[in-house]
Image (cartoon, helix red, strand yellow):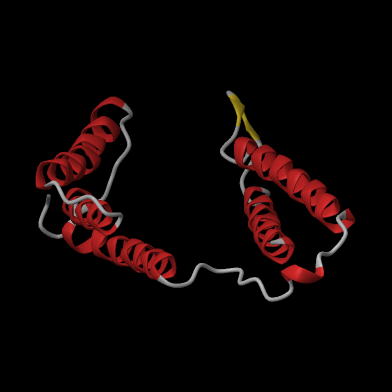
Length: 154
């Protein structure tokens, strides 16, 4: 497990450092106060510091020789579910420009809930509808955030 924690924390540190670098490309302040790079800068800086502290903490642990053959990634049915979810997220992301947010998320949520073991059709339909059309309504109406409508205009 120590190796898995090192890999995950190292990946998080790399992500935070990348976000820190990207946030420095944006202005930290503007004439009204904090600029577009202000919050990403501070969040990535704090995340980087936490990741470094966690790496130091993991590095101080005594290695356990019994954990040398432990797998980092899931395997068996859990690994198949994990791989299916990652592939499904990639497909949904690619489909958003074509079919729009609502349809892509409707299919994504329905398949995701079914892949996680839910078999009642009404639960799947309710979750998929709320997770696609409900989220779209909240973001576009209340939060005034534009989400992709796709070529079909949905």
